[in-house]
Amino acid sequence: MLTDVVLVAALVFTSWRTGVMYRELRKLRGENSVFRQTLASADSAINKAALAVVTLKSDGLATICALEERTIEARRQADRLDHAIRAADLRFALVEHEERSAA
Picture 1 (cartoon, rainbow, N blue to C red):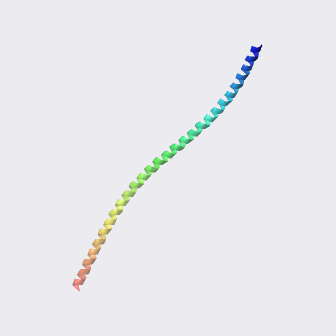
Picture 2: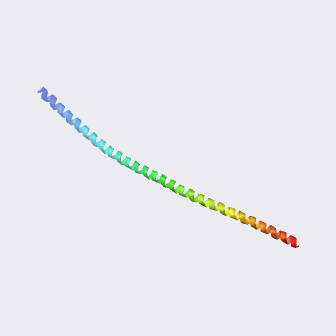
């Protein structure tokens, strides 16, 4: 009889502990699900940020190349203008010299 009481008590205790462990496992699985969703969201955000960085780098390089081309063209135009100004100054000086000589 004492053995039966001890066995029933052990069975009740084991059943109770099994129930507690089952609830803890369910809670952990729920938290694991939230954790996985959070990781997936973080991964998505990181991938979007990486794509933005790559896009900005690509756009930045294209802008720098275009700016460099425009700068070179502007320098060429400035050289042409400088040459034209010198030529005009020379012509003006020649005309003045001819007018002085004629007078």
